Image 1 (cartoon, rainbow over the protein chains, first blue to last red):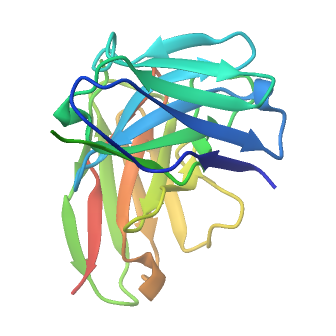
Image 2 (image 1 turned 45 degrees about the vertical axis):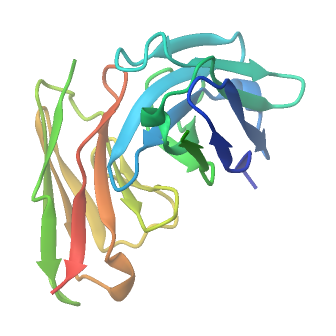
Image 3 (image 1 turned 180 degrees about the horizontal axis):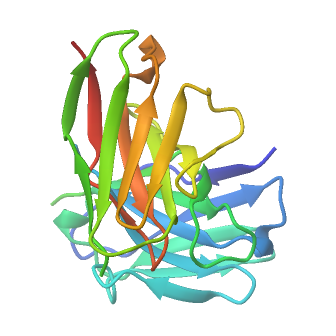
Length: 122
Length: 106
């Protein structure tokens, strides 16, 4: 069974660093890109960027360029989303999602993590 | 940057109704469009991909059509489990979601 299991909720202060995780299982982790999606409170879905687990190549949405970074650890089948300095406006639920097309950068998303709530408040 | 516009933003309907949601792209995305359903506190769930392909396990009352810049999601007979928010997603160039359509009980 394909699963993406994300790390738990976080409460941080503005300026803090943070890394959240997404662990894949039940499939060949390096064969499918992973995307990250933001959902701010009461709002819609926003695509943030994607990473190829086979070589860590990334593409960011222009809206998120320079503010977040993505990484993977192939040895543990885990993808990461990280911030060096959080802002209050980063408060949101963050989802990881597996690309449904094998080895494809552009794809729909067939499996999703359960989401990680990040709260940034002073 | 391809923009996605969904309409309506909210739709009130009754069980058994036929429901149609529209998604328009700012430029042609051929058929690279997916539809998702999201319920409160849950991750989105893939319903259809490549405009009209039904994801495995999704009821056949859901269908999709369109190409180029205009697409529709149709629920042929709305069921109680279908009250949710629906999103379209283009995956022609990078990715972008529409603003969402809330299907609520009339």
